[in-house]
Image (cartoon, rainbow, N blue to C red; front, side, top):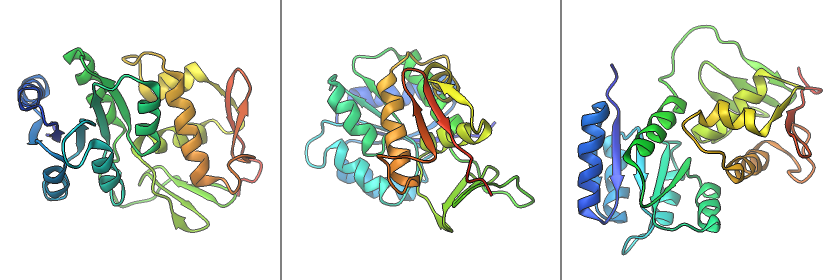
Length: 234
C-alpha cells in the first residue's frame, strides 16, 4: 500500500502533534509538522508532500500567504483547517486554491475522511502508453495523464478542479444536478455545501472560458445544475 506524505501547518503544537499521531495510526501516513508559515514554505518542496493540512491564523505568514506560495508552483491538495467559521473565509480560501475547508473544532473521523477523499482525487504518477484524449474545441482533456490544455497551453488545475472537469467530460451535453456532482466529486462522507460547487465552477470558468460571464463550455441550468456543452467538439 502506498504511503502518503502529509504536511501539517499549524502554530498550535499540541494540535499538530495530535494530528500527526492520528494520521499515522489511522492510515499509516507519514506526517511532517511546520509550526509557522515560513517553515512550511521552506519545507514542503523538499518533502514532496502529497497533501497539506493548513491553518489560516498563524503569526508571521498566515495560511492565505502559505496557500498563495504553494499555488504559484503546485497542485498539491490543500485542506484548510481553521477556527474561522464565516462563509466569506471559506469562499476566499477556495477561491485562492484550497481544495477543502474544515472548521475547528472538528471530529477526527471527518478529517480523516476528507484527507482520504482528497488523496483519491490527487493526480497519480504519469504513465506512458496510449490515452483516451478527449477534444472539445480548443479544450483538450487527457484522462490518463490528468492533463488539460487550452489552445495547446497546459492549464494549472487543482485536483478538485480537474475532478469536476473530468466528470463533465464523461457526460457531455447532459445535465448534472448539484447533488449528483457533489456526491461524485466530494463523496458520501461530505455534507452538502453548495457554495463549494459554485466557487469551483467559477474558478473553472475563469480558466477555460474566453468570457466566464457568458460561458460556452460549462452552462448553468438554473435551479438544477450544470451542462458541459460539446457542440464545438473536435
